[in-house]
Length: 480
Ligand code: PMP
Image 1 (cartoon, helix red, strand yellow):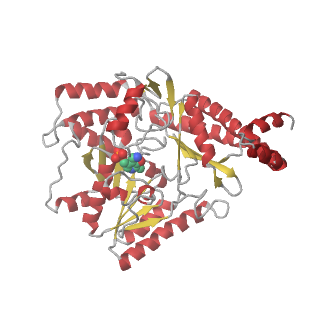
Image 2 (cartoon, rainbow, N blue to C red):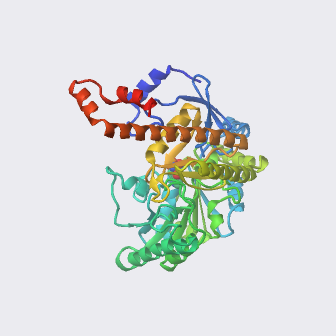
Image 3 (cartoon, rainbow, N blue to C red):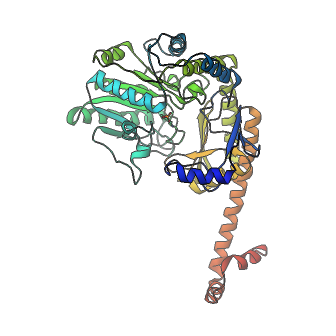
């Protein structure tokens, strides 16, 4: 419900909320007052198709999830030092989706808390200090995680790379160091993985030894990157040989988003030592989890230091997470992610035949990226085009975002209730917007050639202090 006029909300936000907390569409922010399934509604009841909200995993305000939260809230909410069924039922559901060795859960409230605890477990278990992380990765907002999130520590105002952090190249076969136009995917996977091996050696010889390798199983902030098939298994070998443990960050990509499996690491036939999960787990409610092996959990226990987290695993959060699990199963959402995801990928690939700004289309399930380029041969990133796409789609009430180190990759990670009709709508609009961009580029090129043709006119008009170029050329263009 809207309580204040939009201008007042903006003014209060500017006055009272920390300026680093930035809004989408900063110049003209959206005020969203309601959500349902794959749609968000602004204060004027305009519906926006949501292609980016992976948190609202089973659909915004799914009735079963809302009901579960309300019912439990009305009966009891307290910390997990009392016995309660919801937490153990939730743990049972989680471990039933994972390889057998991943059998112990720690409940927390956010992806950041989960990753922070994962690092702590790794350091305690291995007795080592160093962490290997990937270029462009993001793992959370806590200090320990900013330190391992190249996406943040590498910014001009960022904290820089700490001594215990080793940075491996993002295993990107399209615009990374090793590319699919020069090497086979197997070679690329091996070369990227062996870089991690080199870092393991460096850490063992000179520094604190490798405690953990942490990576998303599909790299979202890196630009919807799908690592080569052999990458993780080879990395895990290197890391384990150095005495480190392997952490799979499934905070964005888990819970069946890839369709084929519950967890994206399962696409790579590996078994991490620690898995972190969050965002979709509560469909918008803050609940997250760290799952690990008995050995690692025991090392933590043997320190004698109790782990207590006031809200982690409370009955309401777990009731909600249980309802999310049940809804994924009852509504066949993994199957939907697989079918609709493949349709989205195919449709975008077909669109790529028409628009040369599309350099690459990649994805698994409902995790898809469109890499926009200036030139297909050089693969130069086209950030400007991505910005126009995001802005124009918003005007047409479709929400997409751009990410990647050069901010040129259009990301799709919609709620899992996304349909083929939604795909058709998005792809038709993308077609229209990319056509507009093409026309604009042609127009700009013509204006430029005219500018070259008639410098004297420009000079003459400029000398007279008039606004020179546009009014003259717009008339002239018609006759070209
Ligand atoms: N890991 C990944 C891969 C994420 O994308 C995020 C959030 N964007 C986090 C961890 C941190 O999660 P949270 O914001 O819930 O703390």
